[in-house]
Length: 464
Image 1 (cartoon, rainbow, N blue to C red):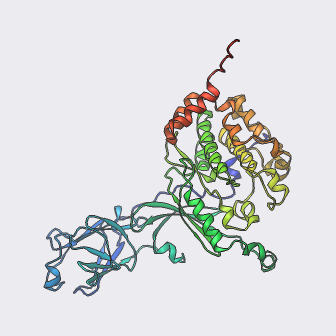
Image 2: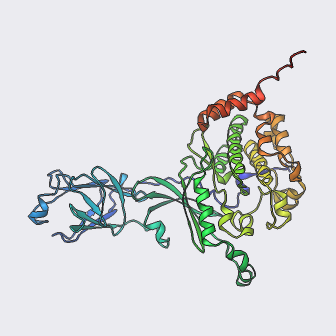
Image 3: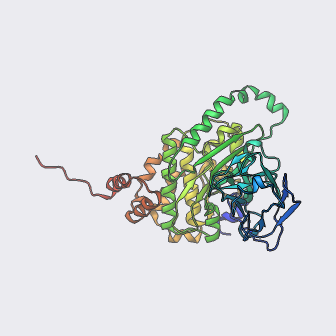
């Protein structure tokens, strides 16, 4: 039997960033407007656009039958418009203010020709906050049920993007800016009462002020290959991370879909990952959970920008839960983590090991360590036992396999740094660097310096 484990069968859960496509439903009543201080009962909303105003073309033509004269004369021909694309219930309802005299949501003015998202039970006022005319009822499933007020007051919670061992990811929209984000909801480790008591001192050390400071540091990070954290809400039982929305899904799905990635594409992706890790390491941050699930792609294009996600998650959960509870079987975890049961102090070299496993997976579509190989995967990792046995490796260059071997050395002191990896002979690829520069939009000098470091022949010393 061939000694290789397919990544699709080894994945412990569906990819948390897997893409799901919503299907529009025709002729569905997706919302309703109820009268409030206006002479009407209710109006069903079943078209993708609904306009209200004094104009004859409006779906709801406001007249003296509905409003007193002193208010009606200030109403515009089209006062406001409601939109739900294709009547798709997974998408938000937008309200556009078309009036100079103003449309208000819960007393807050939208602004002429501006748009915001309308939520269930929102009150629509016309011309003045006190002229409450309608209450909007969203007849679609409430995806925000049970979520903290800090989220529901700021974001519209939409469809599920994916799920896995780490929790759920949902598409959310900022209510006021209408900008899209991905919100990852991570359940904290549920410790038994006895364990909680024994660890009470350690948990108390994470005081709110310290946690807030760490969150602000994470939010301040800025690199083209590091996912931008827009917001983070830390609750006793869960952490809610509001992140950039990456339409291309995650690297795990890309590998599974293509069975494996070509060496040029693997190199382009790996180079970007290394730049992300270098940025984090330079900031004093170890990722500690690098794996294809946590690498997000900007688009479905073969050559695309990628961003590393979930950095610093260990700051917000119990130290020993990151590798075990949140991440399932630790197939990408460095041996020193397993040897200490996830409770040790680690260097940045844990990320180098994980990068080696990710690169192995990209190139072959298989995993270097697996319980299917006769011994527990954890034992294989601790001893650094792996092989290039899959037929795909016959097409992979020796420079690539050499780099993998260097990264998957058990002794972390002998492993290269991320700077060493970036200087490796495998990454001495002018064409790849040009593409990476275009995708990452880095300072031209950054790439040019790297090219000169290992692409230019050494200068001869002048004779004396």
